[in-house]
Amino acid sequence: MARLLSQTPCGDQLPRTIGQVALTEVTITRMVSVAPFQGQQKQVSDAMKSALGLRFPGANRVTASESARAIWAGAGIALVMDGKMPDLAGQAAVTDQSDAWTIVAINGAGTEDVLARLVPIDLRRSTFKTGHTARTLIGHMTGSVSRTGAQGFEIMVMRSMAKTLVHDLTRAATLLAGR
Image (cartoon, rainbow, N blue to C red; front, side, top):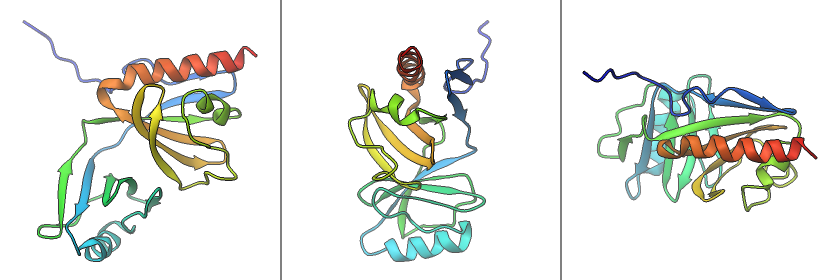
C-alpha cells in the first residue's frame, strides 16, 4: 500500500546558504485570490482593512499587517495570505490558492545580482523599493517578485515549479559566489 507523506513544495531542498545569499521556503497557512466585482473595489478594500488591518493593494504593491499580507497579482486581483478573510459574498470572487504556490525568500548581500541573472526587470533598490511587487519571468517561469527589505525578496511561482525555482536560484547564487 502506498504511504503518503505531507511535504512542503520545496521539500528538503531549503534552507540553504550560498556565499552571502540565504534561500528559505516561506510557509503560509492560507492563500486566497480576491477579485472584486466591478464597482466593488472600495468596499472590498474597506472590508479587508476592518478584518485584516490592510487594504487591497494597488498595482505592483504589497500591503501588510501583523496578521496578513496582500500581494497585487494582476489587474484587479490580489493574493491574500494568512489572516481570517471577511465574507466578501456579492463583492468579490474569492478562490482558495493555498496549495497552488510556493514562496522562496532570498536574502543577503548580492541578492539583486543573483536575481538579475533570472529576472528581466530592474530590481535595483533605487527603482524597486520595499513593498513593490511585479509579475514577471523568473528564468523560464512566470511568477512574482516582491521586495521585502534592503537585501530581501520573496519569489512566488506555481507549486509545480518549486524545484526548478530552487535549482535556478541555487545555480545563479553559486555562479555569483564563484566570481
